[in-house]
Length: 493
Image (tube, rainbow, N blue to C red; front, side):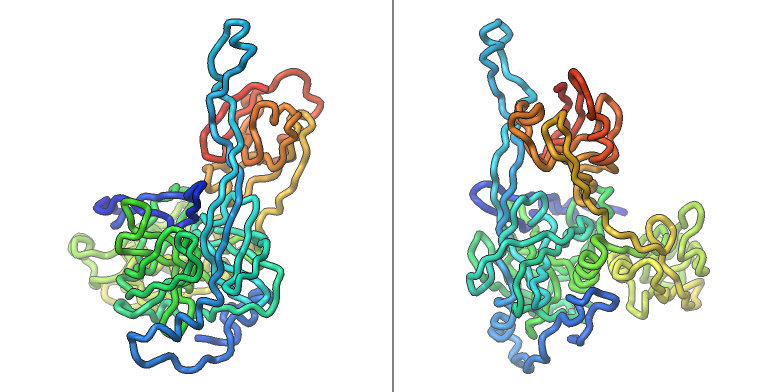
């Protein structure tokens, strides 16, 4: 895909505190209400909307109704984490014996704090926020609009959409109804509700500037990002991450995620994950522990005037089918061909790749979508049964993290989460979750968060395998790994 780097920097509107900011990313710009809004979802999601509300004000400049309806359901999230920071530490014994110098492997744990926002989506305490708000957090605290405070549990996260679900143990909480992000129009008024700079319950207004923005966050490419952002000019700043984007009816139509900025602060544009993606991802994270994503299995590109001329296409708008993966795909099995132009998914026009990916991304493997294509001027419909990335229709449960203890290291180890794998670009490894300060690992200054990737040059797949490789071990061992900040480390213990 062609990428234009005319805009230089995008800040994840993340957690800002005196200790740390959760992250900065580059920006490349190419770069109803119902009683059951999520089907096949857990009981907690069987009713995600409040009773039908009074008609919103007809005056398009009156934001009070939406503000009063949404602010009670938007929470302030604070997190605590421990990260290993490399420091030059002098060894007095080396100095005494003439060695002198710093130990490059010495690291010191440093406690950090950060903050963001979240949206209550059910009365029993499920909250949607951004993955980057809670990623790597040791402790998550939620402060409600009425100042009540709760410790929160991270249910699961999805780095590809930057969505996470957390839960507090509370009942009868206020929550937001899901709106219709498909019906959202460019130029429509919207409100951003969140907690920028630790200022609780802040509301700003703007309009929808664009829809279907893709390639906004320059993330690691193997994360397989699903992006179709709503772009607005509502002021969003660090701390707004995970907060609500609502329409004038007070309905949730997006989760604020990122801003365009050269400084890390608002500079005119903000971006939100549309609620059409949010509600599907949230339901999957709660029910399965990970996102069940269906795939058409096509190599696509957006139709433009040059392509129309070169390919002899009979349509000027849509998504061009350029190839299929080796071994076939769901779309190919259903009858799609190279040179087809996909113009609709389930009746919704797909004039861009981002819109097509959004529509398909809302479905699970095994579900059927109606794909409308223009083939040499003829419009045809195909029923495509979506498959997962492995080429079948199985539902894949999230990994259950198992914890084991390595007496040799003096540490507890656990399997990597999908978020860890995506963050560090790994397929396997063992994450250190607890450290005995008197053990081998603790003596070297390392604390939890370190990921072991190799032991004596042998790759590590999971926690159990790492512990077994170190069982009854005598003498020294060579470890390769990645610290919590992503630095690759090799040491001999």
